Length: 208
Image 1: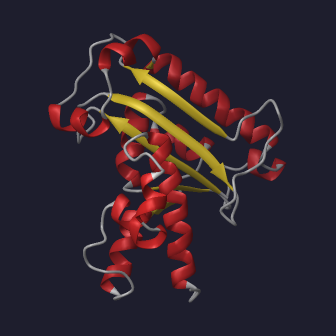
Image 2: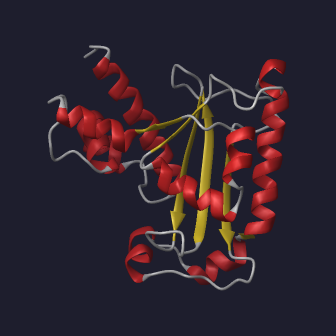
């Protein structure tokens, strides 16, 4: 099983503000995990600093197109968002995973998946859930399309210019499919990431 995640931030390092996070559970066959009508398989949070003082840079805001005035009205403080994230994770621990998982530090069958995923995790650790709690309650096991893409390029299995997430999506799925999925929203990037990872696995397994 995979927990695909992505964030939108106000800059390139954790001195900047975390602005958005999206997470979604997928099965091992890359289909969305099905939950009951009460518990959602995804979580989308708009977030802001507890003191409401954003730290952003112009380059990042040009990319993510977030309007901070509107964002401030709709977003949760880090404290509230962190509690919502913890509650969502805990409910999945009790309904999605087995009893053996509940008593274990981290399920051996759950991988956190993202594109440059440690960048996103560093923001989560700093603002929403400390690393020691995340590793225990979620998983310390990761899969990263950015790192895997580097290995595929080194092996001659992917063109050298295909490095960014959008380029990978266009390479595997075509420009029209990619255009329909909004990049630089956390949800849009997650949708790209899971399909890119699936295509990478098919490539490694020798499927056309």
